[in-house]
Image 1: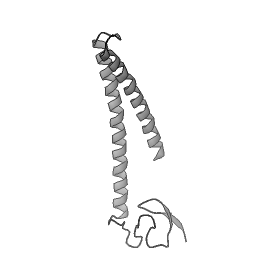
Image 2: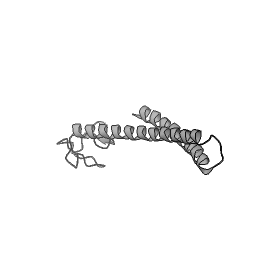
Image 3: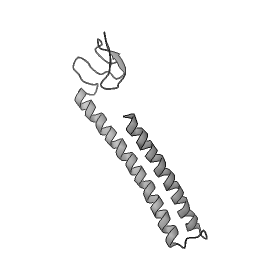
Amino acid sequence: MAIINCPSCQKKVSDKIKNCPECQFDFIHNKSSDGLTEEQLASKKNLQRIKRKYSLQMRAMTGIIMVLGGVLVWYFGGRGLLSISDYLSVAAIGVGSILYLMTRIHLILYRRGR
């Protein structure tokens, strides 16, 4: 008797069981409870990883756009701290910078965790 990972939920199970106790993956017919085969499950997980990476990249791009927008408003608005728009532009620069840096760290950790 060997311990294997379930193709569907990645939980450790015995190779002698018929169904996974967690997700009900059918080891006899190699199908999950929703009718997906191992290859389809792998494809689905790959698509989820791609979507997650794309989402993180778009969040980083949002941070860059916030920084650039704040810099442009502050630069062409007189480069001082005299009005509320100046304070908002500096806040956009700060928030955008933090968002970008945190997202880049998250992306690096995500790539290492694969």
